[in-house]
Amino acid sequence: MSRKRFQTLSGDDLAALAWGGRTEPEVLARLQAGQLTKHKLLLRGVVRLGMRAIPDAAPALQECYEVLAAIERRAPECTATVIGNPHVGAWAARCLREISAATRPVRPDLDHLTAVTSAAAVRAGYPCTLTLRPVNGMVTLPTLGRARVPDGSEAILTVSGPMCATIATGAQVIVIGGHPEEDGTGWQDLRWLDFGSRRIPLEDLDPYRDYGRCQLAARLSRPEAERWRDALGQAWHLLSVHHPGYAATLQNGVTLVPIVLKADDTNISATSGDAFAAVAASTPTDGAALALALVHEFQHAKLCAIADLEPLFGRKGEQLFYAPWRPDPRPAGALYHGVYAHMGVTDFWRVQRRVVTGMPRLVAEVEFARWLGQTLDAATRLDGHRELTGAGQYLLSQIVARLHGWLDEPVPAQARELAKMTAADHLSCWRLRNLLPDRQAVTELAQSYLSGRPCRRTVHLDLCPPGDEPARNVRSDLLYQKLCDPDRFAAVAAGPDADPDIRFVRGDYPDALRGYLAQITADPAAEHAWSGLALISGPGGSLRQCPEVVCSVYRRLVPLSASPVDVLHLARWLAPVSKGSDTSQVLIDAGR
Image: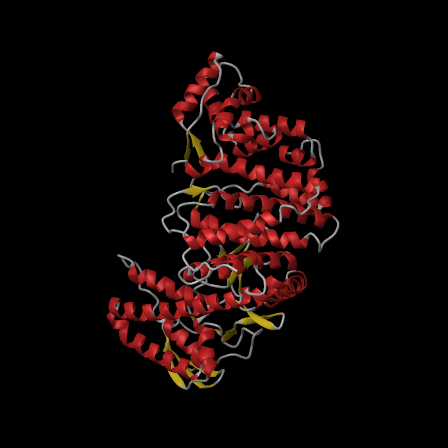
């Protein structure tokens, strides 16, 4: 038992959140209570600051807040259900940011407080009449659903009893609730899906869903909703039988938010720090994919809730780190989030190896080995970092201890090698994309190479992440396709003129090497070809250790050399650069 005590949580609390176990549910209950308190404070802030910033909104804000307080006194559980809704928190946080902005390009949607109050009144059966303002032809009541009404018209809510209410607009009277699968009555119910003994919302209505670059799904059709229902049922069975700790955690309150896949994606997911316990995910390929997304994203949600009660790291983000799950450099706090989330991912695959058989078993072994190594590496980079608080360092030490405990678990040699390959591929792609060697050093190296002088230089690297979206790594996709769907891969890989990536995944390394060299000759800046070449070259050389240096020197040589430059000879010549540079440290300390 730890006697450590931080601002709000104890060492034992933090250990439970790292290791799981019988004490974690009690700590999670406190985190959830903390989020409800946070939402109440946000609402109070919206009212007080909103009244001050926009005086004409003050009477309506004050009236709504007083009604909401009266409802809470009569029916605290109903009020908590609405106020604790993830997207009520997201709306309130957004409002406060807009109110506090130096310039206010748009008027904050303070009227949404009436919708929040209305939802609480309907749930509690609190008799009242409230005037709602439609937005884009919709009036949305959090946790309940939305009414379709004409823009510019008044929508009058009348509550006559628990879950008995109407919305009147002109000659139309809309009855709230009772038609979860029918959208032709003017009212669209929020759908709820079975998740064990509980029901969780499938949120495709709330206007305050915001998950960064993710495209939100519009109202789902009945068949689409059924796909979610089936996948969630499969996910629950898998989690409850084989991952019971995660199942219990998720069952206590998670909201599913459908998002739309991009053309080249399979399964994507996201969370928002403003929307606790909401997991945004694309339509899953199967129940296992949804189970993994829930585990992964709820880890992020938990860490957000922990950090709200107990600061774990500074907010400045002065240094950027390599994150083995991202194409871009990340500040300490974001990397910490990734470590905590991928601890859950690693644990999922650790157990999943014993659940599946055949080729899926090999995939699970690869994923376990890959994410264990990558997560432990990232956690080690953070260990002792100056931006961590005492609580942040203590929680990280518990995470590292748990990860270390899994290192002794046996992994087949084939899976271990494939995990190393995918990890090396990601790092090479990341270096080529984000690290820029010093121009003067590159020019001097090129001149030395042309003059036949030996290479004796350590090259300074600047961290210069580009602003564009990276291309998808097709090579990794092909590798997993070969494992998961060998027949489909065989069809894709057939033919003598296969792409170098296909040749690489097939194991035809000499052919792949020639293909990558041909791509580099045609386009010296072809990062994907350089990273492929790095994989073939092996772990010790300059192509693997500092591919960005080899690429930059080659590109400088092309216009200077009278004859074609031998890439492999250049890479061997540059070996002292890789040996003389601390390539792990440069990922942390390279200048922006």
